[in-house]
Length: 231
Image 1 (cartoon, rainbow, N blue to C red):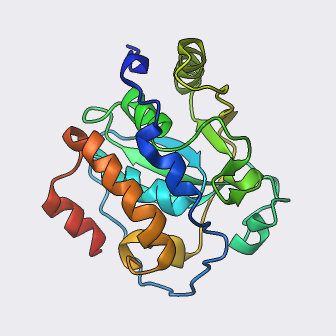
Image 2: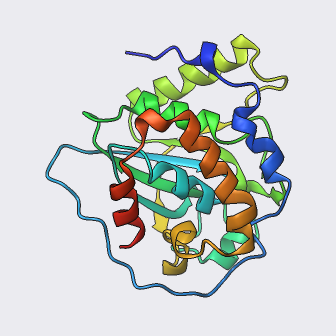
């Protein structure tokens, strides 16, 4: 069943467009390699969604806070170069987009709800750009894993354009899922592990704060968020 969320869609996109102009993530390749401890996958039936909303540090910080989301991995999708490095993707020549692979429990949160978060937490009207992050690697993109996901993504994109919510057309690419390469360890849970880093303080933190206010009924409990951040 398709949700009708266009009537509650904020013209300000939660005010995120202004935040994007502050800085970019491309110049903050902090080599603080972390010890990774994967969040335990439950035995519940799960599904996977793949989204690109610009810098994957922001995308990850948002989706990992949603109740029903089990695991979020930052990485690269949609390109032609096998197992690319961050530096290669940053050249914009590999065809990959920075994206997050989201494993979720569909009995707790639906793909429609994930799409709502996707549309509302970035600017889907700027081609190959989010603020100061410019290039095809920062494109707004949905990599669909099934025909059902494709149909829903196309439905909501058309509905948003028909509604006139934005003063420019939605240019989000809707592409078939072909590959996913996990990013280097230091990119995983970047916001959680580097809260004092300038990009995190000036861009990600305000964005997460706005997101949590709008989607407060869809968030994990505070204790769960803290537990996830400490892993």
